[in-house]
Every structure is written in C-alpha cells, then in structure tokens.
Amino acid sequence: EIVLTQSPGTLSLSPGERATLSCRPSQSVSSSSLAWYQQIPGQAPRLLIYAAFSRAAGIPDRFSGSGSGTEFTLTISRLEPEDFAVYYCQQYGTSLTFGGGTKVEIK
Amino acid sequence: QLHLQESGPGLVRPSETLSLTCTVSDASISGSKYYWGWIRQPPGKGLEWIGTIYYSGVTFYNASLKSRVVISLDTSKNQFSLKLSSVTAADTAVYFCASDIAINWFFSWGQGTLVTVSS
Image (cartoon, rainbow over all chains, first blue to last red; front, side, top):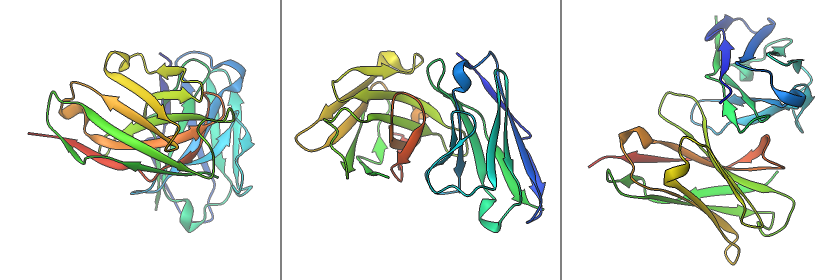
C-alpha cells in the first residue's frame, strides 16, 4: 500500500498569505496520479486538483498543484476566508489511498 | 456535477452487517461513463477508500476491507449499495458515496451519513 504523508499537520496563516502544502508518497506514484481535496468541517470533500496539476471545474486559479513521483505540492497563492479548511491528497496509481490531511487555520 | 445521497441506519450493533444505499441523480448508474465508490471517515480522522463498482458490476475493493465488503448495483432504482459485515466500533464513521471516471479521483460526493457501531 502506498502511504501518503502530508505536512505540516497544521498551517497557521493569515488571509492574503500564501499556503504551501506537501504530500509525500512512500513510493513513486505513477503518471502523476495524485489528487487534492478540500474539506470544510461537516461537509463532504471537494475535488480541487487531479492528475497532480489539473484544476477541477469551478476551482479558482489561486489553487495550483505541482510535483511528481514522491513529492507533490498544493499551493494556495493568496488565502481567502473560505480557504481555511482541511486538505487531503489522494493517490490512484496503485489502488487508492488518502493522506492524513493538513489543516489550514487562521492565525 | 452529479447529485448523490446516502441513506441507511445510523446505528448498527457489533458483529452485525452495516448496509447503506446511495441514490444517484442526473446520471444513469447503468451507463458506462462513471464508476461509483464508497469512502469513509472516522470521527476526527482522515479518509479511507472502501471500494468502487462499475456499471458492469465489476468491483474493486480496499485490500484491508475486502473480506467484509460487498458493493452492488440496483439499476432499477438508480442506486448502489454497501454492505460491511462483522462490524466493530472501529467501523464507526461518516460514510460517503462518490462518483469517479476510472478508479481515480472522486469528482462528486454525497453529503455523508454517520454510522455508529454500538450495542
């Protein structure tokens, strides 16, 4: 099983700041088979990024994904109030697994 | 964007079988365009993929749950279902149904339903 390690566990930032979230698979993920989701407490996850860097429909361009192999990054260029949430990465190269999540909280 | 809605008992006794249904709107589950999956989230914890089914009935399961899971289709009702047997307190979670394109990313999710395993 591919284990996804997300860091940091919690990111404390202010609105307008840049957020950089990391996702590191325990082994190389084939064909950039990685997605990112946002989850607001009490709600279902929402797909943000698929295939490592492709934005899902309706997702603002302040969200961007990058990386390959064993290192992936989700960047939020300027945090809006509605961006404070938990973010999960998910790989689908070998079966399907999720990371443990990064909470982005208001500083 | 599809609409999915989970339904089923909120409380299940230990050792019994958890049964949930997902009703799909805005798409036919018997068409070949989508796959249909179940994901769960224990309270305060992360997400765990349970399994996925294709319109043909082919299923794909998380190896750690495979011995206890059955996912099936009911095309007459445009629903798909989850059965998880021999449940314990560790199976207490919010259960989500979701849709994907090809065993990859989940682009539409139901709102989730909390299932508690307790006597």
